[in-house]
Amino acid sequence: MLKSLQGKTVIVTGASRGIGKGIARRFGEAGLNVLVVSRSQADADGVAAEIGPNCAGFAADVSTPEGAEAMVRAAVERFGGVDILCANAGIFPAAKLGEMTPADFDHVISTNLKSTFLSVSAVLPEMTRKGEGWIVITSSITGPVTGYPGWSHYGASKAGQLGFMRTAAIELAPKGITVNAVLPGNIFTEGLEGMGADYIASMESSIPLKRLGTAADIANAALFFASQEAAYITGQTITVDGGQILPESPGALAAM
Ligand code: NAP
Image 1 (tube, rainbow, N blue to C red):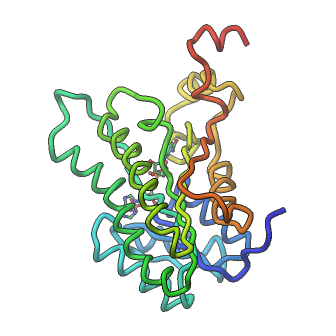
Image 2: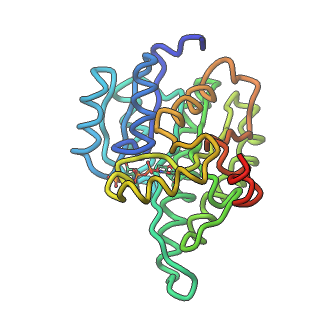
């Protein structure tokens, strides 16, 4: 049982659906004030309404400094400060090398990696004022550990988040701010629902625990990183993937 985080405030970027929605819901259940951020105000408001009165929606494009700064101002105005940032917003359009344009590459790096820098930069004044803060980045197994055709830009952005994290953790330690990352494997989100049972089954077959992850699985790891119990952990990663990265070959799975 983690010590209470009741009354603290978390900003969750990319929280209108998928993993971010699961993180927002979990932190809301734990009694925190939650700012749900996405580019769509209506979608962010919808999630906030589901979570409850301690939650508000805010529309911002976190790949821009203006968007990141506006979301922090909104959290301060609504809840009086920011204790925790979950930098989760991300996109994963596929494009293989030879087809991928420089604009495709820039778009993914800007949305996934630059947004992490911008969101962290935007919360810094508030966390510095408080003398404490918790930053949890949603990275991925793709990039830091594995590869997948069509996702060279995505993998670069997700590995880049970890490079950013390690130096940020050192720089921000004197301010009492920790920076850690969760690496999800294949998570069952709304985006996967339409892919069909065969596709889901083939994904599950490559995972030793034989199921896809849930947004709640990721949210629990994020909540741990934001807890007092994780106070002495910074610059670290938790892989939440049902053991997906472990088999050294398809034969290892077949031999289970
Ligand atoms: P998702 O369902 O597509 O949700 C993405 C969220 O990010 C939405 O709320 C979206 O809302 C928001 N968003 C996108 N661009 C934004 C921007 N520029 N500014 C603000 N919000 C923005 O994605 P997901 O699957 O939950 O993935 C969430 C994170 O987990 C990503 O960082 C992804 O790389 C990582 N991840 C996912 C998986 C997986 O299996 N799903 C695995 C590993 C890692 P709007 O479009 O309205 O802005």
